[in-house]
Image (cartoon, rainbow, N blue to C red; front, top):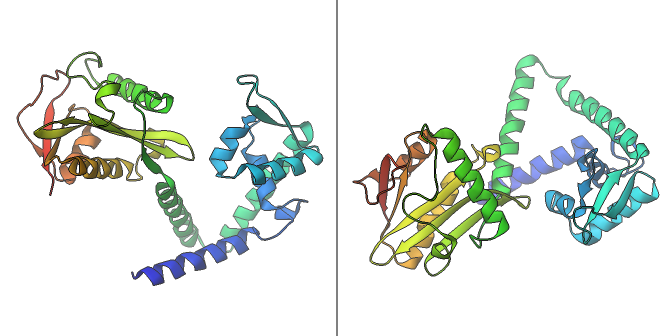
Length: 295
C-alpha cells in the first residue's frame, strides 16, 4: 500500500474511533468531565499511583497533567500527597468520591463497549474483536522505544536480573551467570560494546547487548524480552538493531550462543539468517552456537 493511502486510512480510522467513543465531548460517558480526566481517574489504582509513573504511562507533559489533577482535586475526586517511598515524588490517590466515580465510569464504559457489539451478528462481533486485538498489539509494538543505555544502570539491571531468572527457571540444570564467558557492564559499554534497552511507556521490557572482539565477530549477549510484550516482534527488532550497530562498529559478522530449552529464541535466530557453527566459547550452559555474516 502506498504511503499516502496508508496515512489516509489511519486518519479515517482515528476519526471513526474518536467519534464513536465520544472523545470529542467535554462530558465523556455523560459525566461532568472530558475523556482526559476520566482516563486519569481510571489509571489511578485503589492503592494510589506515583505521579511520575502516571505521566510516563499516559505520555503526558507535566503542565497538562497538573491541570487535569487540579480539576479532579477541586471536584473532590483525588488527593496529591508526598510519596512515602520518595519524599521528592508525589502520589495520587482516589478519594471515596473518586472511587465511586471510577465505578460509574467502569459501568458506563462497559455499556459503551456493548453498544459497539450489540448491532452485529456473532461472526461480525468475532471479526471486530479480533481486529481490535490486532490493532492494539500493532500499536503497542509501534510505541516500544529502543535506545542505548548504561548496562550498569537500574533499568538495565532489572532486565538482566529478569533474564537470568528466566534462564534459571527454564533450564533443567539451572543457570549461574558467574560461569562461562563474561559480559560485565564495562565490557558492554562503548567502545568495548553496547547495551540496548527497550521500554514501553517508560517501563523496561527488553534488552540486548554487544561485546566487540577486535578482528573477530561481535558477540550478541543478554537478549531478553518480557513475557508481557512477546508476540510484538520486539526480539527481531532488538536483533536487527544489534546487527546494525555491530556493522557500524566494523564487525563483518555477529555470533551468539543459546540453550536448547529456548526454542523461541532458536527459531528467531534461524529465521533471521543465523547458521549453526562449531562452539566458539566454553559456555557450559550453551547447546547451540550461531553466526551471521553482515553485509
